[in-house]
Structure formats: structure tokens, C-alpha cells
Image (cartoon, rainbow over all chains, first blue to last red):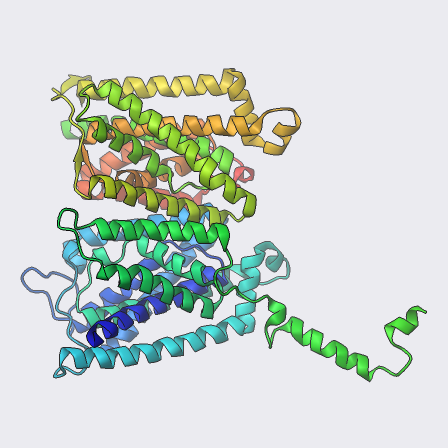
Length: 340
Length: 293
């Protein structure tokens, strides 16, 4: 039971990191990036080829340098960032409106998946990378390593949450929300929309790459089966159930969706006659939950608070100043008396 | 050399099927103004309806007609039960895109629950290929070409000359204005969805018959090449959809011939990305004013 809980927590942490990154792109900035999962994939693959063994029989790929794990993490995040710059520059510029952006990113995701699954020399095709070593603690027992990894992951998630929350409250975060709410109005104020969006896109992509790299280190293998486009739909469901744009909301949403749809359904016994049934019902149910949430509670369980409520937001700041200035006004000059 | 001619011959058949799918998507886009990721469900519906009818009848025409009808009903159902209620609560196109994607997920997995993840088969009588000019076609290919051509011509005639066609173009242009002049917009929209579903279903049955075996991803895989055809040709233009389908169909088969059959789709999708970046309004459309949504 303990081992089950630890493994469940580890997978929850992977999903949390992934969803926090997507929330920067979709929740804060309003970019519907259906190619989000390819940054996760490149993170995992780059970490694998930097720290994993060289090619052998039945395992052909580039690299295989057996470097220390921290090089793997840096390389994975760097590669995801570079890929995000390229994809973002490609899709965010011009007049790529909602439909075009979604179609463009979906096509990029599918092309990447097809090329990687079919090109044996790149990342071992459909079978994917195998035998990537544990990043540290080589002598530890399986359970001991899982426990340690789980603790580290929880720390990473907490740190990432704090970073995302600070980002959201920063002037840059406010700007992203302004772009999301009304891109043209923000542009009218003279802000460089494209650069802002690209920054948010890269930030989310790097977080996705980190999630991929951490997944790779824990499982030790990674294949195209792990990054279909439906993973993005799953992450979007987590975001909408919790409350798009609100970090606390998406964390709660992820915990709920992950526990109900992944952990609880993994306890359902597999039917001998139809082994894929549980998996299919789960995938369909996620689509249904997504539609029902968008229809009946589009703001999510914990809605994003309007800007006035933010303790350090400019609007409340203005509200706080007004009574103060009213107090400092000389007696007899209040607005009410002026009107008389 | 004959290999190249054969590839072009296959490309023409691919283009004909793709043209049906692309025409359906163009009509749908003209009234919804957003991409429909559930478009593949129409094709999957028709194809799997044929699979389901195989034990009952071996008459391919009956199977195809029922498949097309089922797909047309699915399209109307999608509009009435999902898209219209959402239109009332949100005007955010991104939300509508995600909704159509979720519909696709539900539908695909529902078909998977019913039919399993293994490949399904539509049994077609053995075809003997023969030379038609430089191309190598089977009688089935020729029937598909004829049916597709008939469908294109009738859709264009309907759009151009019938009262429904005039009303449809008016609604596609501006729903509010169409309502003002007394067009019953809702009825026109429902009829358009029927037509969209029927064309998508026709694409689905012809695709099922030419491929023979397929799995639940049939529609979703075809969705992307349909996007490619529609966007390359210019969204919202029936003729553009056909031109785009012709280009994408030929490019697909040529990539398959010159590179490898596994990369056939990749060639078409890369072309789509190039068009998205350099000329997002498509090849036929001259003004950017048509770009909405």
C-alpha cells in the first residue's frame, strides 16, 4: 500500500509540473498549444541520450553520453526552451488566429510524433529509449529510491508553484492576463504582444521539458506511446476542472482528475475479454468531464480571482489610496459638500 | 517512370476522397467560423457503420448509404446538442475548439468500446487493376472518381442555383443580415450540417473501401490532411477546398513515392505549415479580410 501511494504521488507530481507549465501558456496567456506535449517528449529524450548508454543491438539512437544527471536536466530544459522558441516563433507570429494556432500546433505535434516513431536512428522509433540509469542512489532498493524521488519531486512541485504564483502576480503576469483577455486592447497600449507571448510560451515549454526529464529519470524508458496529443486534452481537463489561470485551482483540479481518472481506475480489474475497455472508458470520460465543466462551470472549482481582489494588484492599490486621500483632504471639501 | 505515373494515379483517387472531406469542412467553417476537430468523427462514423452492417448485408451500396445517413445525423446531433448550447454561453472560439476536440475524444473512444482497438475490415470484392491512360486504376477507383465528381457538381449546383444554396451563402456571409431579410437561419444551418455530415460520410465510406482495413484513428488521421487541403486552398471557398485537396492528394502520394510510404502524411502536413506561415489566407483567397476566427 505504501509503495502504491508513493508511486501514485510520483505520477501526480509529474502531472502537476506539466499542468503548471500549461497553465502559463493557456491559463495566463490564452495560447491553446496542442503541441505542448512535444516539449515534454524532447525533455525526456534529451535527458535519455545525455545520461543513457550508447546505442547497442535493438537500441539505436543519437548520443548516449552517460553524463551525470544534472547535465541531463540542464540539457532537457535547454532543448525544450530552444524548441519552444522555434515553435512559438512559427505559430505565434503573423495573424494566426485561434483556429489557425490550434491547427498549426496540432499538426506540429502529429508530425513530430510520426517522425520520431518512424525514424529508428533518432530515438529508437516506436520502441523508444530504454535502460536509462537511475540518476542517483544506484545502490538503493527500489522502494527507497521511489521514496527519495517522491520527496524531491514534492519539493520541486512546491518550488515551481511558488515561481508560477510569483510570475502570475508580477507585472509580466498581469500583462499576460491582459493579452489573454483582450489582445488588441493590450496592443493598443503599445506592448510588444508577440515577445510577451513568446516568453510565456518558452516558459511553459521549459517546465514541460523538466517534467519529461524527471519522468525519464524515474521510469528509465520513454517511447512515442507516452506523448500522444490526448495528453494535452488530459492536462487541459485538469486546468478547467480546477480553474484556468489560477495556480491553486489547477493544482486542485489536477489532484482530483489524477486521483479519480488515473489512480482509481487503475484499481478496476481488467476484463479478460476486452482488456482495453477501462482505458477507453477513461479516455472518453475525460472528454465528457471536459465538456461538462466548460458548459456548466467554465470558471472551474476555484475560479481565478478578479484583479481587484489581488492584494498587490494595482486596482486594489488604487482603492486603498482613495480613502486615505479622502482623509487627508481638508475638512469641508468632501465631494458631497462640493455638490451642494 | 511507371511508378511515378502510378503514384500520380493514386494521388488523383486520394484527392477525390480528400476533396469530399475538405468540401464538407469548408461548408462547416462557413457557418461556424471555427475549426471543427470532431470532423474526423463523421468519417469514422460512416466507416464503422459499414463494418457494423457487414454481417447483415454484403451489398456495399446499402452499407454506404446507411453509413452516410448515420454520419449526416451525427453532424446535426453535434450541432444541436453540443455546439448550439455552447454558442449561447460563450463566444470564445478557443473554448469551442476545445469542445470539438473533446467530442472527438469521446466519439473515438466510444467507437473503440464498441468495436475494439484492433483493425476493422470492410470486405470489398477483389479488384483487378487495369490501365486507364497512364494510370493504373481498379473499377472501384473509377466508381469513387465518378461518385466524387457527381457529388462535387451537385453540391456546386445546389449552392449556386437553388433557394437553399442562396440562403446558405447568405447565412455564411452574415447570419444577422440573413435573418433581417427573412431567411430562416436556423433551418439553413441545420440543413448545412446535414450536407456536411453527408459529404463527410461519403468521404468516410470511400476511404473505408479503398483502405479496406482501418482502426478508430481513421477519422482523426484524415482530419489533419483535410485541414491541410482546406487551408492550402483557402478557408471558406468550395473551389479552394477542391484545389487544396488536389494539391495535398498529389503531394501525399509523391512524398510516399519519393521518400517512404510512412512519411506520406508528413509531406502534406509540412506543406500545410509552410502555407500557414507564409500565406495563412490560402492560395486562392486574395484578401486577408476573409480571415476570421
